[in-house]
Image (cartoon, rainbow, N blue to C red; front, side):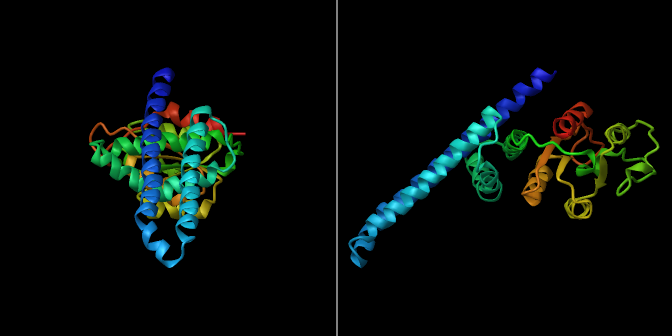
Length: 256
C-alpha cells in the first residue's frame, strides 16, 4: 500500500513539475519576445536602451528558469536547497493560477492539477526536515468528516466526540491524544484561519478537498502545511473520510 501511494505521489508531482516548467519557459520566452518587439521603439529613445532592457529581461528569464530547476531538484531529491522556500511562495502566489489556466487549455481537470500541486507542496515541506514538539503542530480537519446525522457537533472542540466510530473523527481524536497534538475541526476557511491565528502552530497537518487544501496552503504561506486529501464516497462535503495512516505518517515525519 505504501509503495502504491509513493508511486501515485511521484506521478502527481511529475505532472506539476511538467506544467510548472512549461509555464516558466513560456513566461521567459514571453519576456524576451516583448523585448524583441519593443526593441525598435526603445532605440528611438536612446541607442543603449535595447541592450540594457534585453540584458535585464534575459537575467529575469534566467532567474525564472533557474528557480524552476531548483524546485525540481528539491522535489526530486528531497533536499532543502537554499532559496526554495522563497520560490515556493512564488509558485503558490503567482504561478499556480497560470498553471491552472494552461492545464485547462490542455484539458487537464483542475482538481488533478491541484492534487499535483499539493503533492509537490508536501515534498517541498518534507525537504525542510522540520522537527517540532507536539505542542507546535496542529491537525486541522473539515467538518464534513463528521457523520452527518450525529447530534454532537465537534466544531471547535473535538473532545465532545463520544468515539462511536461511525466516522473518522473518533480515530483522529485518538490519534491526537496518542501524540498529544492539538486538533480542531473547522467549518470553512474563515474559521480555519481564526484557529491558526489563535493557536499559532509552527506546522499544520490539514485535511480537505483539493480546492480547500490549495487555498489553505496559499492563505497560510509561509507557514508550512502538509495536506492530506479526504475521500468523498458520497460526494463533496458529505460524510467524507480520510486515511488515518497517512495522517499518522505526516505527524511522525515532523515530530521531534
